[in-house]
Length: 445
Image 1: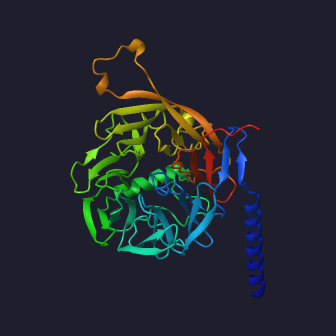
Image 2: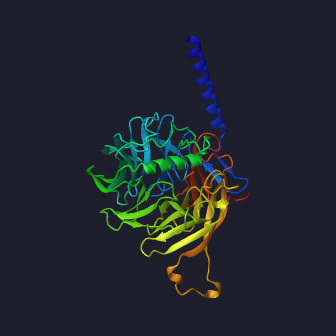
Image 3: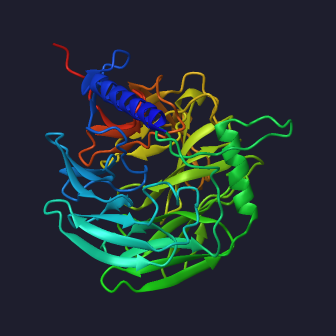
């Protein structure tokens, strides 16, 4: 027994030494040789992550961002001028939600068992979730509410309401504990009995969850009183819920499932009125998803493929006017997630590998895009041109070479509030870290 303990201790020591050695070899800053853009590692600790691409990780003043950290588990702030990282809060079961849109508070959850992976595979949270607000300057902690079950998705622009959803019963979507370098674990076998790729296994598991038709409720939580109220019920799989960044009563949500099967993108007022499908399929295998608002809240953007895996667009719709713009891009420029700069002048994409929907041969890059409209020839317009989809094309610049990144961790690109940096998470050096690529090319000396 003693020898077993000694051997285990030796393995642990070697593992810690290896982790430390790897950490010491990860550059803090470099100029990407293939793109000419500066890249900075923002995080100090392995296991750090930035937020999901449509969640706000930035203070309203634009001076700080929040990230999750590990060993021990917690929340940290990054000064966007000095890049100084400061641990703000530690708890073994803490999870990062988002920054408040107007306050200096970051909102977090504490769920028993989250830290040791006990609840990771349970996509439909059935246990209580404590929601806290933590001031990023003072560290003062405020208890907001304890939600009996369900996932908190978003916060409205005047910071009065949280929104979330819960299912009537749990469904184990993932197949086991997650690897530290990746975001999810999906496993399934094909008709030949052989294991499917990660991307295909994810489709199978998601479709099985959709077909379960578990009753769900969408709810809001009053931040001042902690009162919880149901605002919508469905047997559709409700997910990806987002408040408008400018209208405190407008939400966008999705019907989750295989994108070629569901009508995914919807908007609705908090009182349930004006529920509207934002994209209607016109061909078999057409897909639309990974929807997000721009900073004005006036337009919704989304990944559109006509059909799936063949023709690629970054599409948008104006909520008030219904004006639609489809921006074409080639296969290799398709990205798991797109985003738009706060100043509205450019887009970013996080690329993808050859197993993903685009089957890109050279897609492992962080991209910067500009949109160019397709003009009428000789200024001659169709009689109904104003009512038609407006075509455009995206022009790409490469910011970061991601050839060593494993896309089982999605980079989730976001722009800093000044639109000067593109932030993403990556395992390109082994452990997961948070990085930023400068939009402007590096100056030559």
